[in-house]
Length: 342
Picture 1 (tube, rainbow, N blue to C red):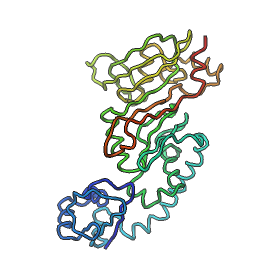
Picture 2 (picture 1 turned 180 degrees about the vertical axis):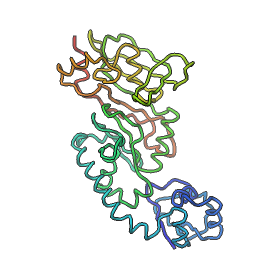
Picture 3 (picture 1 turned 120 degrees about the vertical axis):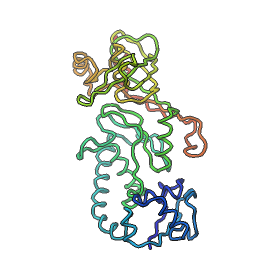
Picture 4 (picture 1 turned 120 degrees about the horizontal axis):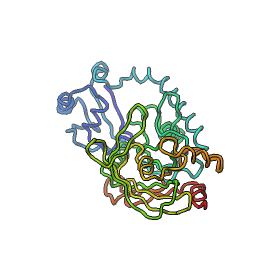
């Protein structure tokens, strides 16, 4: 027999989906049979599988460890064997948290509730791992939750919190993270249907006096990890759209605010380069001579692109605490200083 207690990050999902995650190798027919025969119960009672789980619900499996292990579930022996490895992973998360927290600052957490955490991502930190040795915002998040006592080896085996909207290494600003399955599922839905509005600011080369929009197709080169832009659909590619408004118009540089209507790799960077106004400091799509000049003049490192605002839609049910909420995170002062250079 095994007993599992539903954690905070596992609530608000159907019981059958929970069982499929805990026993990934078990056919649905087997799970429903066990439910009918009361070999799997919820809070000591017969269940249909359609119930929505609450934190603290007790799931009991009148099954042998052999059967649980056969379907990929965790047995008591599995948990004991994984304990030392889990402890090492937790220590890695805590080290990442402590290494990065100074760069985020005490006011860097912009919003937090049981489902969602929104943080100011520093320039120079990856959102997710590109190699095994990377210290990223994902690891910072896990270490933060472990330090607070909101996560441990057991909860992280059930659900692993993670970043939702990835930002490039050298792009700073608002990063949305899920702390629960509900938060991850709902945020993914908002990003997929584009009802979560995302705004960026960028210091760009040249004079931009009027707002407008850029629409076209991006084609990714996997070898160089760059994209190329075309206005024609004949070559295929991913359709993209950006709306932009000038905030400061200078003789040499301008500061733009942009709404990211679609969210594709390097979309803003390639769109602005296509306009003839590349982002200052951008090593892939920018003007290298200008980048070198402002690096010497202002000590600039990295591209001047910043996620400055997100606006949540009206919502009921999941994440209704964020309904119509606006999160703002202004870029560093150097953005306005450079844009105002005459």
